[in-house]
Image 1: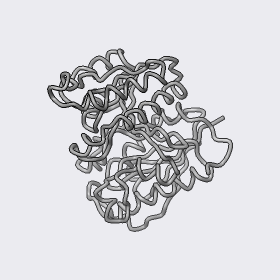
Image 2: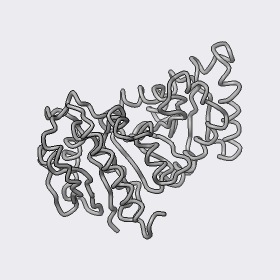
Image 3: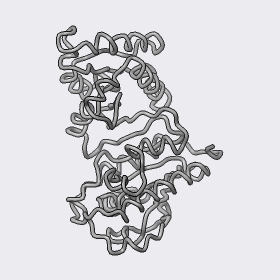
Length: 318
């Protein structure tokens, strides 16, 4: 049965429309998938977008976007990007699609138009009734999940608790076994501090929170977790195959090494939603918009991952 995948265009002034169009061209002739693009034809046609047997457009008809210049953020563009997400949620709730791919948006531009969430991940979790979601990043060589997400570094240090690590680890262990069919996943857990605290010399979060969480996880997850490990070494080891997943304690601890090596092929994956949701790992990149230099590799990887990981729905999502 063919997968039905909704794809939002993202910020009309960013590189989303361009990389989306380029990525869909690479899918021409692909069987077993249908893409439903949620966006505006007046923007997409600038980049040569065309419908086909497996690509259909849900044109939202924002006439005011015709004068929008690439790279120039605006409230009009923010409102349009917000509406694309709302339409995607409607399609998911009604059971019309099996997966969602979201192009980049600007949180700064969304805020003035009434978007009160810290990102698309949090909006989708709220809209689709998911009590827990995890932000993960996958490529063919490296997988990372973030124990804390879009909060300050100071707040992240307080948020690294035993309960939080156990909750994140349990969900990811289940995902790796159920979706990726890894019978015995190996999951590395980073320390929060340099050298994983060096036995309490550089901080006690490892002793108080992280090590007890790893011990608790291993009682229920077949000894799958290793750590806390020094963050400056674990990503090199994982990239060379030592681990199936790395749990980073805060945003940049996980994403700096991931984007350094996997920027053109990596995928953001939201775990815990009722449908598979992926997105490219880059942002709106206003400085590249309209110049024809944007790399569509991560968007293509996001489309491919949505197809590979999703399963055809047979009933409506409540």
